[in-house]
Length: 88
Image 1 (cartoon, rainbow, N blue to C red):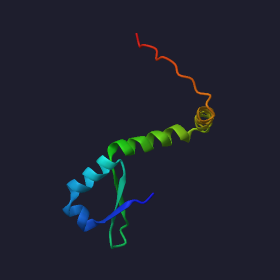
Image 2 (image 1 turned 60 degrees about the horizontal axis):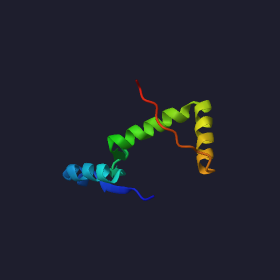
Image 3 (image 1 turned 180 degrees about the vertical axis):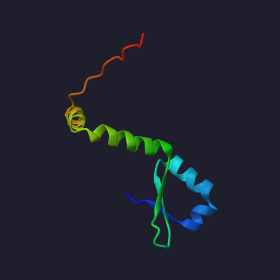
């Protein structure tokens, strides 16, 4: 997957457009800088929260194994639909 890369000057001059792009495309944009200070990544809050949730869920080995098993069962066609229980 190719990431969009823009220069620091472009990002500074077109910040609204850069932010609109990451939100509309649910993607990231790399802001490159010429100096040795390093590059940065801009992403939507939804994308960031999704990544953080995935990291949290997979950080516990037992939870990661349970998720992997559930995904394998789903891919093997062993998943079943259930009605949600009400909170009452």
